[in-house]
Amino acid sequence: MSSFRDKKIKELLTIELFRDRYKDFPKGDLIASESPDFILSIGPKKKIGLELTRLHQQITGTDPFSHENISACLLQKEEKLRLYRKKKLQEYWLILYVQDPALRPRYNLHNKMIVWKFNSGYNRVFLFNSISGEVFILDTSG
Image (cartoon, rainbow, N blue to C red; front, top):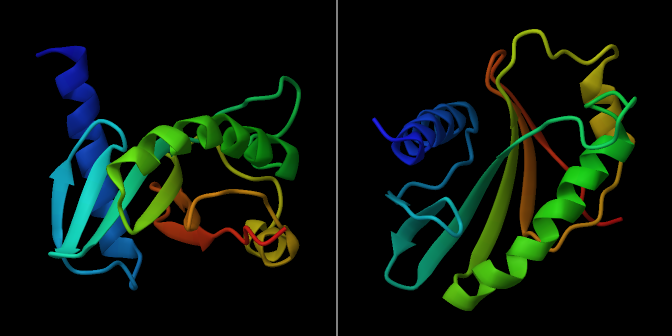
């Protein structure tokens, strides 16, 4: 099996788990794509681009769940958003996901997500812990 195919299978499993855990996930057909990773077709005139990226340590020596590290991940994905917009979809979502059981925040992440603000051009940004099933909606108004 090719590594590209392996990657798409893992992404599909992750997005299906996210779809199951995020109660406000719209109903529609999920279409595998490459840029972005998936397109959710809700109707003839409503399509959402879904980009998945694994949360990892961008900045050496920082906690992967720190505001600084999450912001660095978002900044890295902003460059790709320009390419995605060429598809002229109605919305673009970014899902930062965690799949390593050893990767755990050292504090109550829910309390941090209430006060932290991030900058992003994506319509919605999520932090998804695929191990625990927790979904956090990041405030991108800041």
